[in-house]
Amino acid sequence: MKISDIRLHAAAVFAVAAGSFSVAADIPAGYYNSLSGKKEAELKTAVYERIHNFTINGSYDDVYYGLNRTFRQTDTRPGTNQWWDMYANLPLANTQFSGYLEREHSFPKSWWGGSTTIPAYVDINHLYPAERAANRAKSNYPLGEVDPANKPVFDNGVSKVGYGARGQGGSARYVFEPDDEYKGDFARTYFYMATCYQNLHWAYTYMVSNNTYPTLNTWSIDLLLRWHRNDPVSEKEELRNEAVYRIQNNRNPFIDHPELAEYIWGDKKGQAFKPGGDEPIGNPVLDSPVHGMTLDFGQVALGSSAVARLYIKGESLRGNLDLLLYSGDRTMFSIPVTSLSAANANSKDGYWLQVTYKPTALGAHSSKIVISQGGITGSVSVGLRAECMPVPVLSAPTATAPTDIRSDSYTANWTVPASEVVDYYVITRTIYSGTDVREEKIEAEAPGFEITGFADSDREAYCVESVRLGVHSPKSNVVFVAHSGVTGVEVDEPLVVQGLPGSLRFICNAPQSGLRIYDMQGRIVLTLDCVDNNDTVELPAGIYLIVTDRHSSPVKAVVM
Image 1 (cartoon, helix red, strand yellow):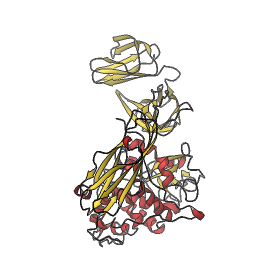
Image 2 (cartoon, helix red, strand yellow):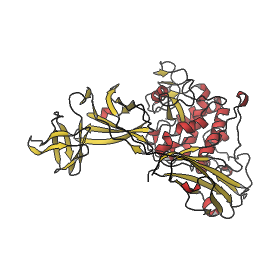
Image 3 (tube, one colour):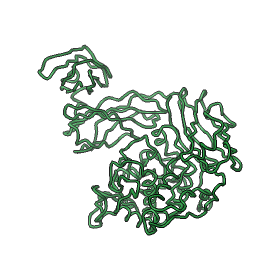
């Protein structure tokens, strides 16, 4: 079963009348009860427990690549149809995204190792639309203030990248400095990330340390607290916090309670925190899901299924919760249970309800899940929305010569037919280093992707697939890249040979005739009239040189 193109949506929270806006909902009663009376490390862990479980639907990659639709609800300027981009001032309509903006992990994904299988990868609390050039200049550099004594290496009037002021940046080469208007926004985003993901192991420790408290290191605490104090919570942040809550069922506590940062890292360390608006302990509360939210499964190919997980969490519930698929195309959706015990819903980790969309006909489909009983007043309704599409037919992309070849990076390029709709691309990068040959899969939003770490290889090759609704195109031709420039595009028909335990696998964009395999003493050990893409041959362990009629330059490969 392919989990495909899941997206979370919620009702818009922007009031657009008269060019003004206001927050459409208050903090849910009792939402922060569990923080009361706690301080320092215990308080930070209580915040973690409050926010780290939230609703994520389907495959992480499909959610991520569908974010431009979600961003329309979280990052559109009120009263307009324009993106609110904290990285640049491009006047772009929220129907314009690809080629202009990218989906930016403001807290760099490389800091946790880049894994796409953890919630941080798709957590909207730190994902923002970002102007493409600014996003790429920012790279994975830490926040900081660019030293005024040095010219920035990037400056578009909103974002700056350059050498950090004294004491900032950790061991990073540069720092990223946002505009003064957004410094508090980024500070509170980092407070959230350092708390919600305090259990992760950090691969980069520019601003964080591998501990649950305080997680942020000394210089970053000083910087972020200063930005937090100098740029207080704005209406933009409050609106976005409400929108995110209706999409993924958790909030940024440092927006709801700005003083919380002082209790954990600042001037009020050692004092017990007391949030305002506590709900009396013992009243039945359903914290998640939020009434009126919608699980949008997006587009799913006929014959495929899509799965979403809805997070259900209660406090002091009395008796079972009833779960009912109601109205519309309810036969297209299914849930595994219709009754949930109060013990499960009240538990520390709550309950994850798996919702499956398995369409049997083309077209748009909708239904809803109604949750009631358990002592709550009324019911909570969650909309379900999806569209079944024909299975896409994709042609192979055409990989073209790389550009911007540098000592440690190059840009991989390719083209696809203009008429084809593509969700994202998968680059297969083959890395040659001595006798070692390994592959790496990279996902990209658009043609023209910068590949880093080139300095660690002798030469490389890449090919590309298009992906639409979980369906992969055939692979493109293979392009070779050497430190001296492009090789293998004009002089040889591309050929990659991958060494495996007991065998060799051939990767080529067309059948190749006259295969000859030599050992390191120059003796022919095997000949074949023709090999095609993904063909394999069995050989004893050793080092071999391979040539074909179309690829006369020897390719070295190791059988393990």
